[in-house]
Image 1 (cartoon, rainbow, N blue to C red):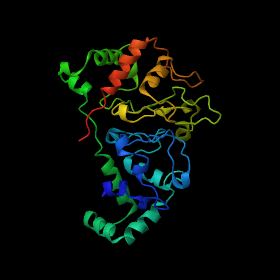
Image 2: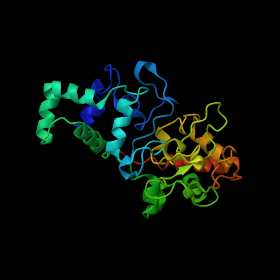
Image 3: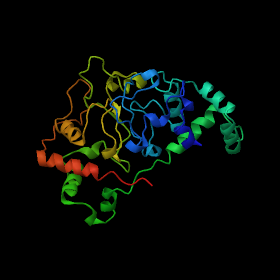
Image 4: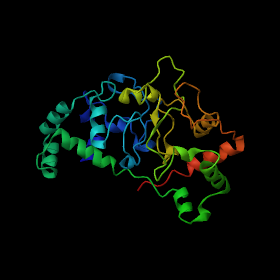
Length: 275
């Protein structure tokens, strides 16, 4: 049910867009455009991130405004910059559609409801699991799976590159929020996590994205301002962009060109397999 809804334009106000319009399966369930484009060609404020492994998340969106995948579902449906609809409108449409009405009745005791729409989409998103990367196999003992450059990149990730301080754990994300300076010099600064917490110290902080599948999901950062993996590593090598809320973990790495290349090869090796 959730898969069917994910690809169906019935969720948008004028039936022109679906969830998959911005979370493109051919692009790692992310948006290849720097900023997503919604209903009536409205330009979004952020890049739509990958949905791979969202089942492992604790908070959702770049600013962490949703505490569950079920809660997350309603935001793009009701955003005037995204699908521009209302859950009540979506429920009415699905009830009026014989195919959906019958399918919901078979699946849920109470048929089509806003909660069941959210549950279906959330459960589909939980199936988007990416794993068994070359890095995983190497750590499991298959030492021949990585080339020399990828091994050097892994060593840098775990040491001088300092990547592990934020991109940690099984999903290569600490699930926390950091200010790296991205967008801090724009005329209209995205408040990031501060829009949710109302704390000035959270200005410009955004959730750490997973590194899994990162080679498939360019461009990067919350505003899609970085085009390639090489540019990503160079950004962190400079220590980000200075601003009053810059995370104390951000500082120049002093990597040379060859070492930057090693980290890029490491990032490519985290891609993994999607069944």
